[in-house]
Image (cartoon, rainbow, N blue to C red; front, side):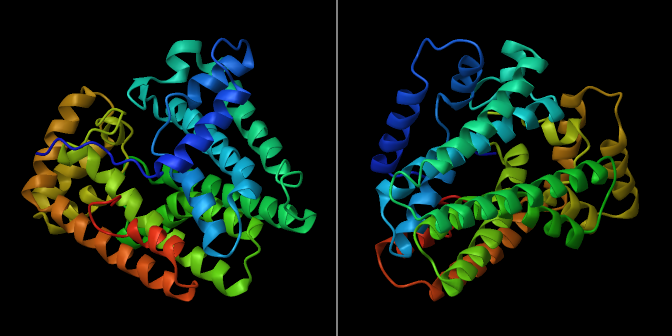
Amino acid sequence: MTDIDVPQVADPKVAAMVRAEVEGRWPNGVSDLDEVVRYGLVPFGKMMGPWLVVRSALAVGGDVETVLPAAVALECIQVGAMMHDDIIDSDAQRRGKPAAHTVFGQPMAIVGGDGLFFHGFAALAECREAGASADSVTRALTVLSQAGLRIGSAAVQEIRMSRQICSITSYLKMIADKSGALLWMACGVGATLGGAEDIPLKALGQYSDQLGIAYQIRDDLMAYDGTRAGKPNVSDVRNGRPTLPVLLAHERAPLERRRRIEQLLADVQAPAAERHGAMSELVDAYDGIEAARVVSHHHVRLASTALESLPPGPHRDALAELTVPGRLV
């Protein structure tokens, strides 16, 4: 078991710009809905969404000032989704602090998540005043909406997959829509506002889907490899979610041990920590961790290859850096 911190994604300049925007919009001491919104946003996480917005825009010839409101929009929308996810999953911790629903109650956290979504839409609209064309803002809104619907559809699939074993193919397809669409939301919005044509948009779509699969697998592994993630490591087992390390261990295990994995996923009575401990032993015994890493690294290679259609330069290189094993995945 290791004890590694999740790496930050945003470079200091991008992080400082987004943080200043957030602090200006929701300063310390705000009340009512804005208090819940600020609680969700601060302290900041990896800043991956805002960073991908900015880098994708720059990679296709855009500029930071035009897309900065969109970077704030992505942080708002993704944090709003996490606020709702914590309620669905009954997770009491997020980013190393109590989840919003444990502090404000579920009704307030639901409304706070909704508020973050609408703040996100409002921030995206501000890109028009920041220099983006009306057409590019409309196209960015289309990307945002379509990605959100993909994520919602994947969430329904994930809930239906719970408490049972599914095929690895089905699981990978689901996380391409769940996490791949989350990254496409950022890459597509940034690139569209940056004036991208069809070829770079397609490249970034392939990049974000493949990187999203790898990123979700890395998230799956955190429950079993000792990585500190700022949220409970028992969450997936408690909710009966068949993550990739579990599915791969199940594929490799003898019949008796397969049935034990299936029982642990279906169990709703035993304490979550007890179920997680038993599942961890099985995942370790049948090489679920290492096998999942191999799959993750395969998908980051595909993500790296997709970027070859973008113009060469420092911004494409920065996007490619996220595909280096150990950096993000």
